[in-house]
Image 1 (tube, chains in turn red, blue):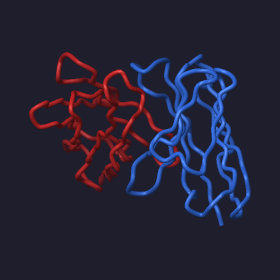
Image 2: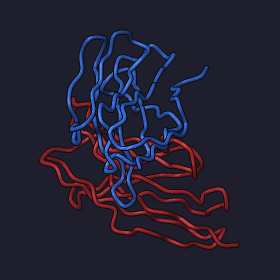
Image 3: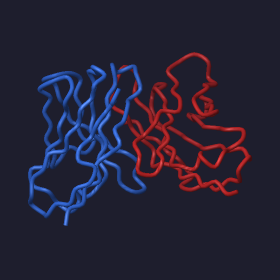
Length: 113
Length: 112
């Protein structure tokens, strides 16, 4: 069965600084990879996805993620964070041609002025 | 365009009571899922459906029932609520297995 690890439970970053959130997965083949963001009291919103092709994926809100097969990682980055980026971020994977999503435990991002 | 709508948003139950969480989508999506979210555990798949009349179990199905009589609706039933089912429940839908899932705003359920 696939598993997803987000090593950082909580990250604090200054407004305007760069942000990187880590995600590692365990699966035999390359799964479909997703990053979602959840604002307090809200549902999850898709930031970006990777199915195949270019390993650097651009998403919404200025986020990007890089798939590294050799490291089984799919880290999320943003060059300059805004106070509105404070939220919880989830990495998720699904086996190819399967619907079942497995989520990481999430990383909470706090943005300080 | 409403997307995925969940009702109610909040509910408090007593142990042993039954309840149905409602989920409706207006995007004509075939795939629908129910997840529960608990602190430090991310989201875990309870049940899912790949079309009307077809359902299957996810990672944590015990204590929950589902049915899918229409494309639009995918209700989740708790037959005899237990305190361990206190959680935030999310419904999601997608057009097919290759498309990302769209999430509702969640139902916060407390069982005393």
